[in-house]
Image (cartoon, rainbow, N blue to C red; front, side, top):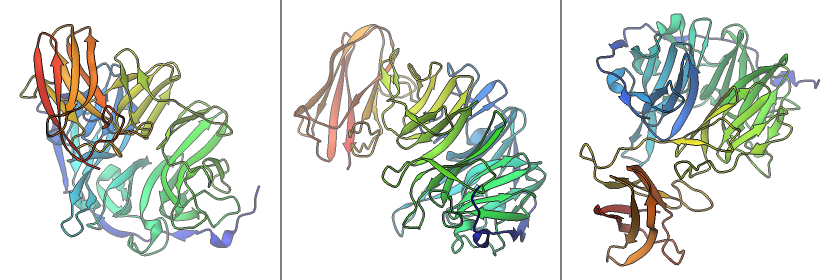
Length: 484
């Protein structure tokens, strides 16, 4: 065991700051059933509850009780805050959901994210208690919750602008609880910018922009582990993900450790098997850096969702396998874009959350079922075809093999053949996406275009038109704005 440079490890006393009582909570009884369908295609979090799988998306919270055959979704009218799910915690019938919105600033014309509150259900989503952002709000800039943990009846929120926040008596009162002895100041103290939190037995682990903090007394005192405080340190001080693996008598803390301010820091995955005294970097090197987002464990097997795809290790990080592109041959669908944001593995079933939908495999990734949110075409005022994302950036959206992809959604009324052509603003043919493609049943389908012409050249910025010609049905037009 390596000796630790104890002079650089912080052992500190908690100083309470600002306590709010709970008049900021609203209760909701469902007046209508949850909305049908998956809420969104950007899957930020996945968690298992009693008889349910829960999914945080960019447009709200979804659940499925039949392995993805159908979904129900919750939003503002059900008691959630507006915007996307930024953090999710599930245990049995208890669900905690933090939400956030992006706001365009007039001064810089850039987006700032701010939280829209925390919603709590203790009855599997039948009723919700919504806590508005005000009692959690210790700053007006970038105050949103990235992670949630519960320890001995206390809720812990990892907030970027709001710091580490605790809710005693399961959220009846709230207070900021910095993981050190300094006066709360996220503008000055990097350790007060909090991104991740987990509760393990009686331990609290907190990841910030200045390393990993551990408390064994409910947040009163802390030790800090960072890139410069140990002989065997984490790869980087920006810790945006934490998880604990317990198997075969081993207790392993895993961390997504990104590069922060140090020149020798780098993006990777770090782990500790001795309570944080030493760390090993098991995925990522200074030459091949890995941006990890989320962890899951199925016994001794480790899964890591990263910006390069899904990694798997069966030997605790000694060797890794990178899954290939996710393909669903049954419905002729693929996941475009390498980024994976969330993963949940249990009993040889893997759920994978990406920027381009949700996927599930029961055979180690040999085949996948892909599930997406979309508005059915040709009903409820929705046209027979539309494109998404729109505007579309071929250099940023749904990237795969150096190409971006836009989806052209349409529906068929019977078995038929489909041809799709793209035209420029002068109505000159740019490319043929598909020609005479057989669709054997009625239903909703999509084809993808990579933003290139028939010669393989990227098209210029501007407005393009496309025509979906459905045999014995008609021709249906749509418009795409290309922006790079």
